[in-house]
Each structure stands twice: as C-alpha cells, then as structure tokens.
Figure 1 (tube, rainbow, N blue to C red):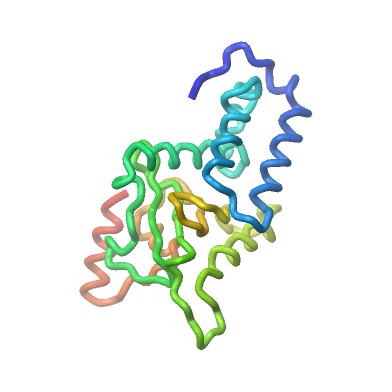
Figure 2: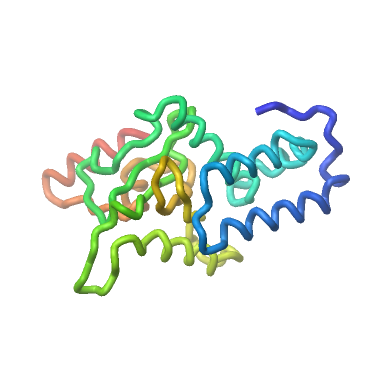
Length: 204
C-alpha cells in the first residue's frame, strides 16, 4: 500500500470520508453480491487517493468499513499471488458441515475470513432450505445487526475467487477449532473427533 504523505489530515476530509464510507457500506448491504472488481475499486478510492491518510486511521477498528475493505483487498491479492495457500478447505480437518467452507488467508498466513460458496451448499429438503440460501441468510443477519448489538461477525455476500457465496470475518486470535465451529462445521466426537480437535487447536 502506498502511504499518502501529503494528504489532508482526517478532520479536513471528514465530510468526504463519511459520504464515501456510507456509500460503500450501503453497497455491502445491498441484495446483489459485491464483486472482486468492486472491492478493488473501493480499496483504491480509500487507500490510493487523497483519502489515503485519513482512511488509515480507521484500520485499528476491525468492524469499520475501511478496515474490512483493507482486509478483503489483502486476501484478494494473496489469492492472486498464491492461490494454493490462500484457501484452505475445512475438509482438511475432517470437518463436515452444511456447506463447503474455506479459511481465507492473508499474506501473513493468518485466516482472516471464512468463505462458503453457494454451489457447495447441501440441500435440506426436509427442512425446506434450498441450496444456495445460506449466503443470503447470513448476509441478512449482518444487516439486521447493523448496530452491533449481537456478537454476529460481519458477513458479506460476494463473488470472489470466481464463485458466489458468503464471506464471514474471523475474530483475531482464534484457533482452527474455533474457526471450524464458526464455519458451521461438525467435528465428530470420540477418538476421531479428539484427534481433529488436537490438530485444530495446535495450528493457530
């Protein structure tokens, strides 16, 4: 990221920033999935323009739209540079859930998001839940929790890595076992489950 040294201080760009942040947040809350190209444009607007210095002041707040876009840009770039290591399937840990899920890593090899492709969702006809509906439901949960009253991680409805699905933010400092649970995975009990838990807890 290029640091904009001569950008105006944050207070001088307050109106511009607030309008930009609001517009970007509304885009993520819209029904249509946000594309990779849109995220890159948002990143360039916030961090590669005269808003760069001011936008950087919000990176300490994980839930701020500027921080979210910065993180999304990082994983997109990492996937382009190293696609084989950027996505790690939860099936690697013997975990089965309601959908195919992947840990999405940044350049530091830290899992930043959990991606659930819509095409990988299982269909539960007995419950009347069609495949492809999980991403929409999780996205709506984020919109309903706009004030942050409930501990619901930010979830975006996106088209990334050439697939549509949900992308759920990961809280920092969590073990892979905690991430498996966050990904909606089922870790079996007994000896097999114990081995999975031991491995998942070890790798952080």
